[in-house]
Every structure is written in structure tokens, then in C-alpha cells.
Image (tube, rainbow, N blue to C red):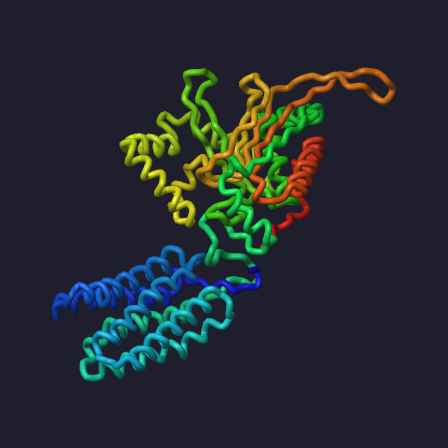
Length: 464
């Protein structure tokens, strides 16, 4: 997929705005002509007015709002317009079945060619220039007796021609979203056949969970934390170190930053989305809320400390509820039966990757890892279940420190400090060998936490 070209338009280009002006002009003139000349039956209104106007507005919206990354989605309004032209030729010009069939084939070919080109499978987007001149010539011929009526279609086709001149290509080799990707992740397309179909047999996360437990010897971590506090990181704790080590582990094993949605495996890429439950006060009656911190695999301990503490302080010092609390409160106002339908609808939208971005951001069920400290509560860690809603694939918990006697090589007995950690893992994002390799590496990082002070020398990218 990295060999695929990626085309885009920018709002800094005059050609982009000229394209938008032409398409908006096409929509406006079509509405004006409909009011002036009158409309026909319901089929005519929907196919000859609503459909092309919606296509023009959608094309402009995609190009101006997200043309930098999602310009390939303009293929959707192009297909809408192709259907309009095919229906227009059939309804307005009385073509016979043979000519109408050939016209349908021609517009479908046009839409398919545009889709292939804008998706980056062919690098030469300028091929649309000669192709675009053909429908312009056809429209001019069909409306030769009434050129005024050709204005809406002519403006649309002129706008499409200008759009071709406005298109640019991102540097070759960079990855950018394409069909099948989600707003919160890139689809993994080169999984083994067994891994690709396993999610259809193991449908839910809780029935696809593996449980992992480890005891961490924390003497080096304690020394490391004391040293960092002397440096000025006064609020640093074991949570920061574990999270920084987890991020660093993703540099070598990026597969743990994947997730499942709609029975497909996706990767968060360089966005490590960490979820944490916090209380404004350490009291049983104090309400808790969820924060979400965006980290990177290349983050050092200083980056993790700054980002996490800033988010925690933002919640603790806020006089009002967090965005998560406000969103949950809004859902709580919906009557029970309607709320059940609303949640079903959200699950459906999430399945197809259509959940609004702002809901993904406030949702505690979407992310890379949920980590919780049982040590702050003075109890051992628990195996916390995964959520069947959302896409969170890893839930980790660590407990309070405990002491354990250890027999040294010379026969003497020493006491060491340990922290137990437990993880619940979605086994569908990667296999057991991969998980084992990651946690061995994770444990080595925690044994030598000083490596977290500097950025990694190398970052491994996930598979395509």
C-alpha cells in the first residue's frame, strides 16, 4: 500500500476554489431552472434535481473540508453524478434501448476510471483531462437546441475539469488513508488467511480474550523514579514508567497497537491512545471520569509525564464535568427503550467505521490500552474484562508493591520488591508468539528504565 499514489487538493490553490465555484454554480442554477421551468413527477425531482445537487455539494464539502487526506472520497459524488447522467439521457432524450445501454456503459466506465485514478492505483491523474472533455462534448451536442439548459451540467463538468488541474500528489512512499481505512485506524490487509477469518468465528472480545500475569522486580524502577523526582518530575510514579515502557515496546512490536472493528483488523499507527479512570478526590463518594491521552511510540518518559499529568490536572481542576461526563449525561436523558436503540445504532455505525470523530474521542471504549492502578487502592491487580462495544484490545492492571524473599547464588536470603501486573488481551489482533515476544521485551525495558530517557534509535512499522 505504500507504493500507492495519494492525490489531494489544497484550499491554498486558486484552482480548488474555482472548482468549488463551478460546482456550487451548477447546484444553484439547477435549482433556479427547476423553479423557473417547473418540475415533473417524483422520480424526475429526485433523479434530475436532488441527486445532482447533492453530488455537487458533497464533492465541494469533501474537497474543501478534507481534501488533504480524503480526496479519494470524491468518487462517491462522481458515481452519484454518473447515475444522474445515465437517467437523464434515458428520460430526457428518448434514446432507444441500445443507445441507452451504451450510454449507461459509458458513464459507468467514466466513474470506474475516476475511482481507480483518485484511489491512487494509477499515478497519472492527468489522464482524466482528455476523458473529461468527452462528456463536455456530449452535453454540448445533446443540448445544442437549448444551450441554456446545458448550463448546470456544463458547470459541473467544467468544475470536474478544473478539479483535475487542482489535484496534487503527496510525496511517493508516504501512507495516507484509502478505501477500507477508518478515521481512527489503517486496515491491515496482509494478514495470514487464518488471522483474517478468525474474527468471524470469535465474534466478541470477551470470548476472544487471553489472560497474562507477570511479576515485576521494581528495585531499579524505584531508584529511577527517585532520580526523576530529584530532576524535577515531582509527580512521577510507576504508572508513568509502565506506560512509557509500553509505548517503547510498540516501537519493536507495533502489532499491539492494532484493534478489531467490523471483523477487520486495523492499526492505530503512531497514535497510542491511552485510557485511564481518574477521581477528582481519593474518596469513595468522589465521582470518577475517564481521560484519554494520545501518545506516540517514540515518546520518552518526559513526554509521557508531561502529557499524562496535563490531562489529569485538566480534569481535577475543572469546575465542571469532563466531555466524557457531559456526553454520558446526554445519553442518560434518553428514555430506556430509545436509548437501547441509540446504542444499537452507535454499534452499527462503529461496525462500518462511521462513528463521528468526536464520539470516538470521548469514548472510553475506543483506544489502544486501558491501564488502571490497583496499587493506589491498596489491593492486588485484577483481570478486567474487555468491552464488546468499541475497539479497545488491551486492558492492564497493576497492584501495590509487595516484598518477597529471594535466595541468592551464595545461599544468602535477600528481600526484593515486586509489583504484579495482569493483562487481558484480544487474541485476534496478533498471535501468542507475538504477545510473548512483546512482554519479554516490555519486562526488559522495565528492568532498565533509563533507556526511556531518550527516543528510540529505530521504529518498526506495522505490516501493510
